[in-house]
Length: 211
Length: 165
Image (cartoon, rainbow over all chains, first blue to last red; front, side, top):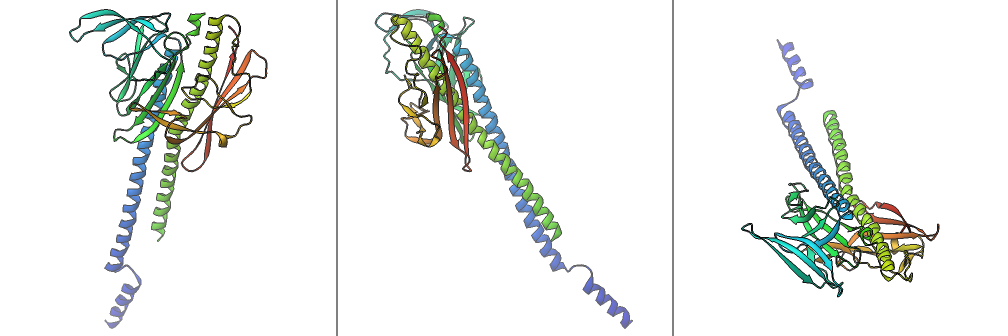
C-alpha cells in the first residue's frame, strides 16, 4: 500500500495541470482571442468603409463623366434659378445680354410663357444648384444637386447611401464665348465623414454651331 | 506558448493584409480626385483654344492666331477661372515649384483653385509642346500629390489639338 501512494504522488507531480495553471492559461488565451477578434472586427469595419468609399468615388466619377459627355455635345447651356422654369430659347442681343424665352409651370399645373431680357457681365460668379441645356437629340436636360444626391431630369444618378453636396459655376454662357461649367461635388458617407472633394470642368463644343 | 504563437502570427498576418487593403482603398479616392483635376486642366486648355478660334472668326482679320498664348512651350498653371494660360511657371518638369491647389468656398460649396484659403496636397501643371509644327499642340496635364504614407503620386493625361478649322 505505501508503494501505491508514492506512485500516485509521482503521477500528480509529472502529469496534468493544476486548476490555477489552467485558469491562468485560459485567462491569457481569452485575452489574446478578445484582442485579436476586436482588431479583426475593426479592420473588417474599416475595410467595408473603404470599399464604400471606393464605390462612392466611382459613382461620382461616372456621374461626372456622363454629364461631361452630354454637355460637350449639347447647346444652349443655361443656369436654372427657379423651380418649374424651363428655358426654351435664348437669343444673344447686341448689348451683350440675352433674351430668354421661359416656360413656367405653376404648382397648379398652369403653364405661362414669358420673355426675359438679361444683361450678363463677365465678372458674375454665382453658385448654381442646377443647369439646363439642349442635348444632341434636341431634348432639354437639367442636371441638378437634388437634396443629398445628383439628378438628371429629376432622376437620381448617384447612390442613395452617399451624400453629395456641391454646385455648378457656369461662365461664358452669354453666347459670346465658349461656355464652361465647373462642377464640384463633396462626397460624404451617411455619418457625415468627408470622403473627398471631386471637381472637374466641362467645356461645351459650341464652336461647331458658330462657324 | 506554441498555440499562442500560431494565433498571434495568424492574427498579425490577417491584420497586416487588411491594413494594406485599407491603405490602397484610401488612395483610390485621391486617384479619382487627381484624375478629374487632370481632366479639368485639359478641358480648360481646350476652352481657351476654342475661345481663340471664336475670337478669330468674330474679328475675321487674322490678328488672333488659333494658338494665341500657346506658342511658348513649357509648364503652366490654370484653374477654372483662367481665361488664358497665364505666365509660364517653368521650362522643365518640377513638381516642387508648383503652387498647391487650394479649397475655395463659393456659396455653400468648395472648389479647387489658386485663390482659396486651405492648401490641399494636389499640385497641377499643364505642359504645352508645340514644336512639331504650328498646326499642332500637345497638352499634358499632370497632377501630383503625396499619399498619406508619404509616397509621391502622379496622374498624367495628354491630348493633341490641331488647327483644323
